[in-house]
Structure formats: C-alpha cells, structure tokens
Amino acid sequence: MSVALYIVLERPIPGFDHSVNGKALGRAGEVLDVLAEKAGTKPLMKFFSASPEEMSAVAVDHAVGADDETQFPPEQWFAADEGLATIRGLRNAARTERAENLEKILADLDEFERVLGLAKEHGVGWHLAVDY
Figure (tube, rainbow, N blue to C red):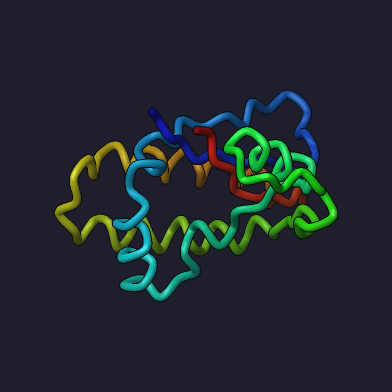
C-alpha cells in the first residue's frame, strides 16, 4: 500500500495545477516528526484535516462504525504562511540529516513549498490530506 500526503486548497487558483507527489513524505512520518522537533516547527501532520463527510466515509470503509458525520470536527483551513514555515523548517533540518530517501523527501518538500507559495500569493487556505 502506498501512502501519499497532498495539499487540499480551500478554493481553486485559476490556471494552477496544485498536485504534488507526496509519496516520500507519506513514508517519512517518523522522520518528519523528528525533523519538525529539531527545526522547532509545527509537525506537518498538525495541518491534517478533512470534512466530516470524508471522515465518516473513511470510518465506514475501515469498519470502525463511525458513520455519523456529526461526531467529526469541521474541516479546518490553515494559512499558507503557517505551512510554509513548517515546510522550510523541515527542509533545512533535513539537509543536516542522513535520512533514507532524503532526495525524494526534499523534492516533495519543494513541491509543497511551490504550492503553498502560490496559495499565499492568492490568499488561499489549505490543509493536508492523506491518500491511502
């Protein structure tokens, strides 16, 4: 099973494809947490959010029985500046580490920075999502 992290924008930016690879980040969860601590930044997964409908569907798909959407928090949006601070901190800390797949992790972080940079320019909120 391949896990990938990706960015969901609050609204589309006309003419901009905001897709990212995110597979290296999806496999680097523990490494990212260590890097965030070293960098003194908010961990990347703290930006995770999903709509109650999405969370309910995931719960049903995984047979945990939570099909009542009202028990999930509302979808949350974050300022691109917050995400950029984390992405840049992670990238700087990663350069001092000898992590497995470091080049791929850095490439994913660069893609995230590209998307969040444009989101900031357009005043568009975002959150992190996980593709299983």
